[in-house]
Image (cartoon, rainbow, N blue to C red; front, top):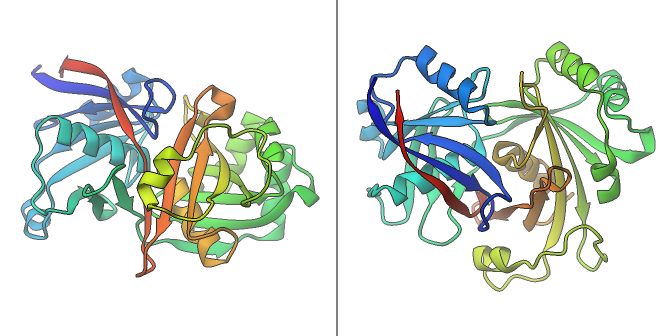
Length: 310
């Protein structure tokens, strides 16, 4: 075993213990895939990451570091809260970006840009592949989630590395009141080769929101002096051995934003809130720039500093 620097950070929050925790092993060199997976299972967190030097090919394209991302059961090609949390940990540990504006992260989905020139840091949403859902698949998913037909406004297959399925629901109360049947939901995800199902509602500006009371201070810092921001209320259910509901899900929020903005279902700038039913209050800042690139931002805070023997 080797003593390795380690951090546990809370992502999509600036207040400890209200976001999504992430274990970060800052030196994953020499570890096998099985050893990484075993440790990720042991941490019992939704994700654990291992930082490595970039491959020579990725370094030649500007990569600053490589990250491998594990749930308790499998390795992921990309995930949002591990991207931001790992970048936060890398910077806090003394990482020096090669570019004045962007950090470039290597992961199995490719090279991901992370904007660090403004706070909070934000990653460029990876390219999205999406397709409409079949009516039969939506019927069976509605049953697993306990929804009636009038509560589902739109549905979409979303793939930005992880294969997600998104439902746009009629209002935030519908999102928060869902009580899924875990066995039926997992069976549906396995049958459709889906890693997670996300539900969301859009609360347009001017609506008296009864669930989200926190100010938009972070959002205003992220997008500048923007007009009143719409809120998007999100929950995400994962196909995982241990975790069924994820506190805050960056990869799903990225694909959700690309879908909703492209179809005119949400504005180009908004704040997504996730984790309320779990006692969390994650804030995900979404902004589409003039080139059409969607950026997904959020604060991170370190909760544990130390070493781990691996």
